[in-house]
View 1 (cartoon, rainbow, N blue to C red):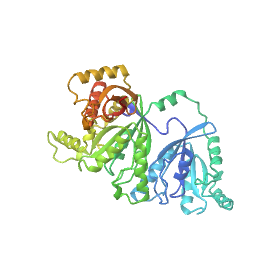
View 2: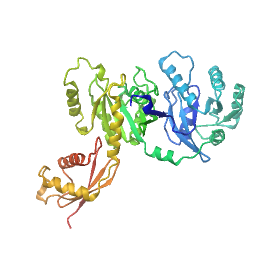
View 3: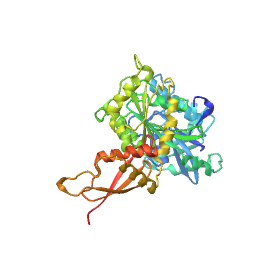
View 4: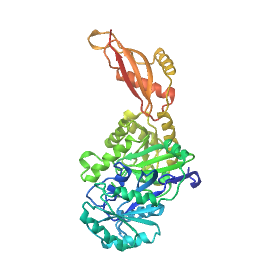
Length: 463
């Protein structure tokens, strides 16, 4: 894992890449969301909301291609965040085969646009100028002034209303390089492991992502809350494909004041819904907090397999023998609902034990896709009940009614593994102690590693 030969970062897969670039607040993210057909980038009136590279895919006229949305470019800005945004945009421009330069037709050409035009011409790549915010016929004339920058293709559009977007897509597809279709590529994409990196702000999520892929993929700075979007990166490692999602830091509700921050929390939780495995990053120096437990709860609610990564372990002062065990005891006490989740102490900054995470994620993903035949399940169930280790089953019910009987069980779905338990007699409602016992024994018997198990009861009423 540590050698460069063992992994290859695939940006946007094997599809040709189209980069959306431009100065701040011209509508790049609105156009990106329109082209990929979903709300992937955060959109708002505040300039500079998009900071990292956001990847997606689009299909038009039978051709599929990757898209990357970049932060607003401000060359030569000395501020930490704008300078990093510019560097990320440069990475995207280098990777792309076509550049879609978004300009504001209402504002007209600005000195910053002139500076960007010089930058884009120096790349030698095909540039399509998307004159955005053209909502009325009279504004189309305003788009014509952008021909002065020397680019052949100037297309008036409204990303908000979708006007002119079809013509822009036609122009993009016409200029894409030829590509052979590959069924194998589609199969590989279907087998990828979707890995979400979540946690409080400034616990080292972006640093961990950058360490995993071996390049500066997302902006890392000491400013808490730098990442706002959910950022996808596709990584191949030792024959396995991972889609890594670095999410924005999730704050307490009362701490999210800016509109962009509120949206970033929504986007982070949405990213968990499409993830297979969640790496919950915890700050070793600050210790486990109630917010850490809440964030882990979001991952559990989404049905993700979970790995607890205790970051900044190299910065823990006065480490003594037994400190990792003491930290884990405290963590288990504060996250009792995750007694089955593995804990790894790491340093994203120095790379300590980071190489353990991907193999653990693979094992967890295999477990969440595991299906146990009904005959095997019921043989297991009979053996467990007859062993005498189970809590009293069925538990007594109020009112002196007959006891609840568990008849048999079957697995009804995976991702996460879900089991249907059929009961009869008494009132419906398996006691939580028996449900927890059953989950623990299932995990032991069938190696449901790092994966939540769901138990659903189907009760047959008397008569």
